[in-house]
Structures are given as structure tokens and as C-alpha cells.
Amino acid sequence: MEEKSRDFIREIIDADLAAGKHTEIVTRFPPEPNGYLHIGHAKSIFTNFGIAEEYGGRCNLRFDDTNPVKEDTEFVEAIKNDVKWLGFTWSSLHFASDYFDRMYLLAEQLITMGLAYVCDLSSEEVRAYRGTLTESGRNSPYRERTVEENLDLFRRMKAGEFSEGSRTLRAKIDMTSPTMCLRDPAMYRILHKTHHRTGNSWCIYPMYDFAHCLEDSTEGITHSLCTLEFEVNRPLYDWYLEKLDIFRSRQIEFARLNLSYTVVSKRYLRKLVEEHYVSGWDDPRMPTLSGLRRRGVPASAINNFCSVIGLAKRNSTVDIALLEHSIREQLNRTAPRVMSVLDPVKLLIENYPEDKTEYFDYVVNPEDDSAGTRATPFTRELYIEQDDFMENPPKKFFRMTPGREVRLRYAYLVTCTGVTKNDDGEITEIRCAYDPESKGGNAPDGRKVRGTLHWVSANHSFPAEVRLYDRLFNTENPMNTENGADFTSSLNPDSLNTAMNCRMENHMKNREPGFTCQFERKGYFCIDPDSTPEKMVFNRTITLRESWAKLKGKKK
Image 1 (cartoon, rainbow, N blue to C red):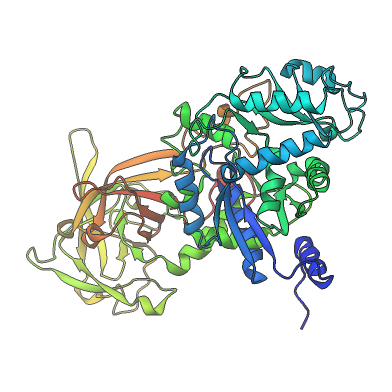
Image 2 (image 1 turned 180 degrees about the vertical axis):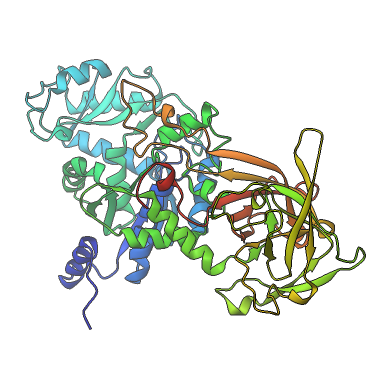
């Protein structure tokens, strides 16, 4: 049997283990708690936790909370819930703020070694001194301060003597280096802001590039798996660990997840939330994990999607149809089937007894024999979909029309005998006659009937609200806007349509929020947390088939 190919990260880990560099593999998932996780983070979660599990190692959940300006415990708790929802358990929980004392001492160590200095240049001056990719930078006029002066100033920064932006602590490396990140990067800045965990204990905070490698080293992370945007700063990551002579984690970069018709950036997602383009971080149209969960997407579908796309060294854009296929594939196997009518019209079977109710065995899931059947009530008055009837149909319309016989799923064959209309000419009721000998939906004489309609009993159903969600953006690359247009110009105006008078089978009243099912012929839906016993709300997770390509004039 041919051995399954290994991705480049596992090949590196295999080689490190073979060389005896490690006896245990330790990874981490290190989000900043400044927003909700999105589908792009799912790839990192799946990679870090999955690799640790595969090698019998450990994976930590660590919050990189080094910037108190936008971080909050709300995001911390949401991130924990998302990781758990995807089915992963962290070996230990950490915060960057757990290490603030140690980071400060290591910063003083670099000062003592003559490898860090306090700089008074403003942020604009720092940029001017830094140079460009083709021009060397210039040394700061404060670069040659003595160790004693730097220690004094740094301690006074910590004590809160200076205003925000007045001073930074910078690493002393090489302002002529062709590697831009080595041109005396900032290590600490002054921020007089309250931290979500440490309160006002600190007014200086470490920069990400200084903090991250120290966190990895402190936790003994063997392989620090990051997305490609961190590749350019890897020399700085290694420099800090080498100069401080502490445990050296190995940073490895992989391609981030870019998805068509989707924005995967917390900064832009925050704009959608704060400017009320969506109802919140968990709006079912959002690519956040909380939004996908509320929409009814199974965690297993997301994990399978991450497994299929794999790990690569180059960024590319994945077609969202691949994620949608994974969702459909999972729900087709697991979702129970339900008969519901989204746009109802009354169907009256005139020759069916008024006081009769009979029950038909309804197959709960044809993909899962263990799901069994459910007794579905059938009565004289039913509801069917408005678009399942036409008075003057075009060719190849095989549903109900005057004089045509159709099948009511699991029940009987019926023939339309007439309609009732209101003063505006709208059909309010369709009349029909049924064939009592066609119980189960089959004609005893073998005659062929092409149309099959789903239905619900008028006396055994209830009204509900259904939210028909679609893609949030109507362009393949929402960030590739022309003429300076904002990415919000690509928002799909039809990303949400609401049907208010749908009819559901009565047994759906007993279901809890999050319950996912298939509405026959319509798609997959789940119960929204907004639901109450008095008003049930259902979200469309996804349609039964891909329809977007056809709508956009593309080949399917």
C-alpha cells in the first residue's frame, strides 16, 4: 500500500524527532483576545491541536494579550468556547500577561548586555530613520545612551513617569540590515490603559515580536506554527532567543486560509459589527466560528474542510464552494428530514373526510437507517408551497396545475379541481381530489405521476419565522475593490431574506436552539437562539445544491 504523503510541517517534525532534538512535541494556539475567531483561525486550531494530538504531545491555548486597547474578557470566553466547539482540549491555559514580570526582567537583561536602549524619537521620526528596502536606516540619536541611563529611563517608564508615545525601548541590532525587522525594532511602548487582567499594574507593554518568542520559549513550545505573514519577522524571533540564550522554539510558517466571497480579517469584521452591517459577531452571515455555529454549520464539517485543504507554503484562495460541499456532505449524513412549507398556500382535499386524521411513516434520514421513521399526520386541509402550483404553467413544469395529478409525499395522489381567489386575484386556496387507492403515493394501476410535493397538515403545524441566509459578499474577492471603493460596497443585498409565515410540523416545537435538520426540497436549517415557545426562528444553513455559480452565470 502506498504511504500517505506527509505535509512539510510533519516532515520537519519527523526529522527533529529522528535527530533527537525533542522527546515530546509541544504546540500552541495563540490568539489575541481582540475579536471573535473566524474560519481562518479554524485552520490554525486544527493544525496546532491536530499535530499535537497526532504525535502524542501537548497543545496550549495562550492569549496574546499584550495590547490592552481592544482586548476584553468577552473575547477570551468566546475563543475558549470556539476551541471547545471544534472538539479540541488544551493541555494548559496561559496568557501573555502571565509573563509580564519575566519579560520585563529579560528586557533589562538585554539593556545590561548593551543590546537595548530607550529611544525618544516619535513614531513618525522612527519611520523616517528606518529607511526603505533600498536605503539603509540611520541610527537614532539616543542609540548610544549608557547602560545605566537606559536602565534608569526604562524603570521610570515602568513607574509611569512619561506620557504615551514619548519613549520606547528598542533592540540595538543593525540599522543597515537588509532585513527590515532587524533595524532596531521596538520592544516596549508606553500605554496608560487598563488591562483586562492586570488592571493598572502596568503602563508599559511588550511589542508582539518581543513577547511572542518569549512566551513560546517559556512554555517549551517545540514548534511554533504561524501563518506566512510572520515569516519576515522570523530572524527577529530567533535573534531574541539566541541573545537571551533561552529555550529556542522553532517557528514554522504555513499559508493562511483565504476564502473566496469572504473577508477573514478581524479588523474588517469589526467594522462590519461596529457599523451595523451585521447584527453582531455571531451573525450567521459572518465567517466567525460563532456565526457559523449559529448558522448550523457542524464543527466536524469545518475540521474536515481544514483537513482537505491541507498545509501549503504559498498563499492562495480556496473556493468557498469547497467549504459548502463539506457542510452539505456532513449534514446529508446526519441531519433528520422535516417537511415544512416556507411560502404556504392552503390545499383542500374535497373528497377526504373532514374529521379524519391518518399517519404515514416518514423516513427520518434515508442516509441513516438507525434514525428510523416518524408518524406524520395527514388531514383534509394541508399547506403546500406557493410555487408548487401554477394555473398556466410553462413546459416542463411537473408540479400541481388544474387537472394534473401529482403525488403528496408518503401520502396520496391528488388532482387539482379548482382554486379560490381573493378580491386582488391572489390564490387563497387550492382545491383537489385524492385517489383513496393510492395510499403511500403509488397508483394501483401503475400509472406514472411525475410531480411529488411536500406538505404539512394545517391542524398539525404552526407558524414560524425562517431567515434565508446567503453569502455576505457578492464578489469573489471583496477586498479587491476598484476606484478606491470600500470593501463594504461588495456586500450582497440579498444575504438575508426573511419568510414570516412558514408552517412547521408540530414536533419541531420541542426542539432546542442549535437543532439542525433538512427541510425537504429547500435546504438545511437550524433553530436560532432568538427562538421562543411563542415564536420559533429557523436559520438556513445552506441550500441543498450549489446555486450561486448558476446565478452568476458560471458553469457548475
